[in-house]
Length: 303
Image (tube, rainbow, N blue to C red):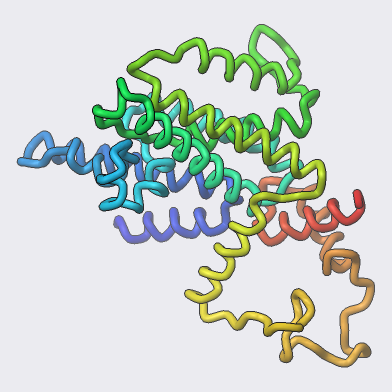
């Protein structure tokens, strides 16, 4: 009974756009932790000790022993309202982000936003004398999410979104109010969480400002991710001197090459199929590969 359900969820995960995949991961981690917490009620299990394995510690000695927490913390939630608010916020603003950027850029900024927040969190919590002696722990996707929110607001500040009771409001005001509420709510108890969010805000703003100048700070990270994934998948990478996207096996006489290739390596037929799919099923029905192709065509036409 369980196996078919798990297989169905896995298939839906594989077909989902990157935004939904990231939400899937956050929800899956949350469910595992809540199940462990439920089991802990009836057994000799310390759920706080389990959380320590995925939370980002402010203590550098602990961090050295648990370096993976630099990644895990941004996918971890334990409270229902915490994950509910973060995922709704992520889905709502993430959909707007995806109107202008690719799935890889979403993933890259999610990670860089989290790491930017983590860096500032570690610096402040270890350099301020009155908090350095206390151990703090950071969890939650909100540091990554706010980077995406701010990046979207800086890139398209006048994009209108509908708000209950307020009607249409420019996204720049939504982001500005969110940042102000965060800063006004800072106190000693929430200092670590607050400075981490400030780090995420800085990364999001930097991303948007640089992308307007044609510089994508997520590109090196995504190239590294592609290389690692390629190694695990057994892919062959191009050798030095080969043109991007080519290999000895792929290079064919010009008479055998597909005709009507557009800039970015996407054919007219491929673009037509993608546009038809959007018309029939909507943008969310596109696969990550199809979104990448559409993004390449869009970027090349703008340049």
